Length: 360
Length: 242
Image (tube, rainbow over all chains, first blue to last red; front, side):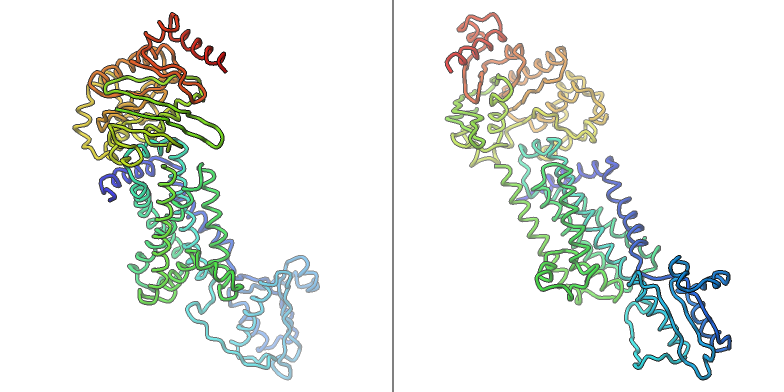
């Protein structure tokens, strides 16, 4: 039977390490904030202030209404007049314009067609510029020559703000990285320093060692989650539509899973450096690529889809997106939660086994 | 207190410990001597349960070390070769931690160890961060930590390496007192003068026993003036045999 008092002794000692070691504090607080800010702004997939060249040959009320519609959004910005003497192609090449709008002479009367030319050297941006432009044109009530009148209704994120998509994802990514790093580094550090040996000669069991490591970091991990959530909401205006206690409950499970992943790493890695590499390797890319963060799981090949089942973040992404954007409740998330719990227990058992093996 | 028979530890094809038979009594100071790689540390690590023997038997207090490892762990204190207290904990916090993992109440344990703390000059530095202590103090603190749960059996693996002669003498004074109070002390060292403090020593080479006995008797047997000479002679003889 694991002894509570021994676990407490181990956990208390860990708290001293955390409070006195600046490196741990950096991992816990600084790293997540930097990641959130860097990833957050770098992965911003919105288009803002696209320099737009307007060639208005009509100069009537209709054409002005159209141009105003473009300029009144945050998406487009008129290229200053003096640049207008250059040919559109030259402006594109010099990157002074990313799109040009040509309005023919009789626009609004006999002519209803306008020409939008877009610099597609970055196809993603071009695609988005086209969508924005179509949206603007549609909203003015002026007909375009598209044959189909498509009206999509976009749920949960009507403005298609990419922050809605990446902030929950970043919470998942940062938490798994930080938590796996914390436990794996802290155990491998004890191995490196020789203090683990001193614990191993004592009657402390593998389970007690593991619990003594997990409990303090569980608190830290949750604290971290709250910080990331708060900063994400403040900086990127992501809504939080669900229940906070549901968020805490499921985040607790996810943090636990991530910490256990770190424990598992520490049973293999002999040095802090090896532990760090392994913990990052097992969390960063798999979470980015295979959790459904960047690419939808449904569009992956079947084999990769199967692989996503062992990525903790694939469950947590359903959970966190569900809570923040859709206001999901426990009943709608319990399956993902149970999967996380199952993974934690399994990893804890394997880690304890491997720990005992090292003893004998 | 300790009984081993045909103790062997093999790492791959390398025999680190080869057929060691020991009988160590209560209250004895028993020394392991030998060059680096002679098998001292490996033997000690097996005796305190950190390594599993490849073959042979270890009994401590008549209990088999594999079958009764839980019980035995409460009986032994261990101070490893490498300094292994937490540098970022205060001296007293390290002691508290060891009391905690052995489930003994801290205050009474500290009170019991007060004479040793005084003797070691540790009482005044208990609030200091362990990393700020000089090496000699760290060694002494390690010993006190290993004694928190009052174990009848104490393993000291090269406890005095890197410590000045004066501090070493004081250290041995405490070890002597501990043995007198009935504790069994197992110590490994490569300082030959320290071997004189031991009641019995085993001299090891290539994992095997080359001499075993009381230092004074061994010196007489080999006609050596001191332990250093004895040591070289013993190993020289065994070299000739090879």
